[in-house]
Length: 414
Length: 90
Image 1 (cartoon, each protein chain N blue to C red):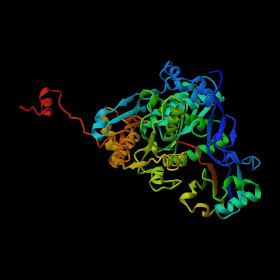
Image 2 (image 1 turned 30 degrees about the vertical axis):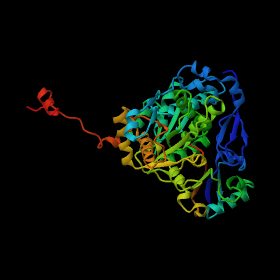
Image 3 (image 1 turned 60 degrees about the vertical axis):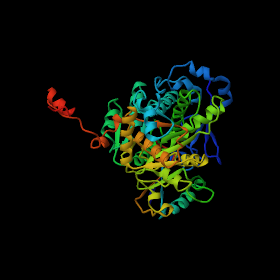
């Protein structure tokens, strides 16, 4: 890419709109609103075609004109393009006609959708000349920054809540990153990182590089559309932590519509949260224009953000398209994890359980139509969050190594 | 005197100081105090209705004031107040 399609950064708050240079700026100095990447869509339209996309390698960079880099990507060159599965077994169980699973639980290299945003953020970090990067993470982001920063020869400082799942801590430390476990909830970690950034010139992927980072989430939407044969589904269900993924998937659909790649299909996007941390769903259900922050208490730790950065954006979007956001109990999350595994052979983490359980609830309540296409975005892998299943799963048969004992299992006891 | 931590976007107004002292007894009072020390800062912290901007989080001793008494949250000597942009994380 010799020329960039990024003009500058712009305050997303409509009443402000102040413009900024395309550096590591993330917040408007006037109103503290979030900055958005301002693309030259006219130029993109002239240069990007469906044929061009199809001719490229199957990774997230096949859509690179719509990602915020000024030069060729350098990090995460094999990430993205995860499977979209037609989930007929699950559809039958839920009583719906057309159901798909977008499975980012098998994302390369760290088995969650965070590989997408990190590929973009760290490519940008290298462009901007950072040698040290960091993040505040509920686990999946920690894994991805650890892996990708190491591969890209960047030093990394990764901040996590100290009560995180063991597998997510090991799955970060293994890469040799500096892992800082903070005694507090994610929102405490996040606040601390913002203060750390104030005195260190580092590239924090989800703070000062967040404007770029968040754009990586759009590739989930581009891929769903491409994998459906260049058609947007009628309904998409997405779990929400900060709310960024939901708003960016919706943006991806609007961009493909505006570029003329697809015919508008009045796609609706639905949010999913755990009841133990549901500031966005609670606001949507009560018609509040803003959310009230909460102290999270849920097994879905990857979604446990009580003070979501994009909460207001997500609420505005869901209200503007007359959509909805649901929440479910920890028991419903575990049941949904088992349901997805038993019907489709896909082991998702707790966050994926949240998505499916909320979808089920919204199908039953009529919010999600049974006769329209539905895509569930599964964001992470079940191998990372096994703790809640330990006492909820059928135990194996333990037998002596002889055929008689095995026959007892089959009920063929003589 | 309580200590107020100033975020990067506001440091141009505080002569690049990252920490300043205030002698006020509440968050509301702190904003008035900051304005008298650094004219123009109130407009950046508060919207046209005088309410704290929706994209700013304020913490007293690491606790979000929305879990305390909001703008009426008391501040004592030795307390630390942090002003943090809301757009971070996730």
